[in-house]
Amino acid sequence: MTGVDEVSEFVALIEIAELDYPCNCAGEVFFTFFKDDAEGVALTWHHGKSLRWWNSKLIHDAALTDKSRANLATWLKKKGYAGSGEWEDALSKEQREASATGATP
Image (cartoon, rainbow, N blue to C red; front, side, top):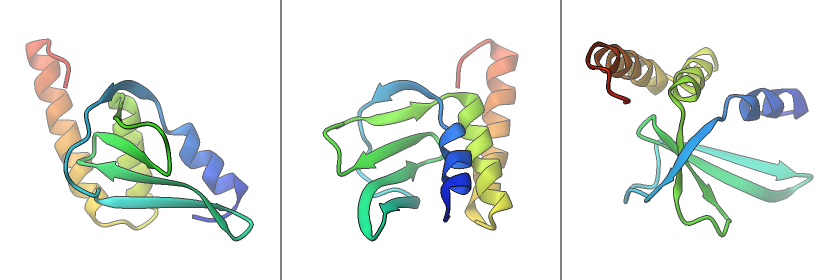
């Protein structure tokens, strides 16, 4: 992703539900943001559910809202990331099951 407009579009998709303890994986999708030629912020997307900030004092993963998870998966799919379609399908199934039982995914 490049340019202010595309980065702004990405940032607008992020809604944090709560902070959660990090999993042990490195993440499936890496997002690295640069200012000029210097790396500023690096994020990783974990299991289609949360983001982790690297280069940060934040030691938890940021669990995303259901809306944010679905929107981010859709955005990645539109950008050509093949794995996001599977996550989008899984999220939709998880959300349908939660609605049927009254639970929160």
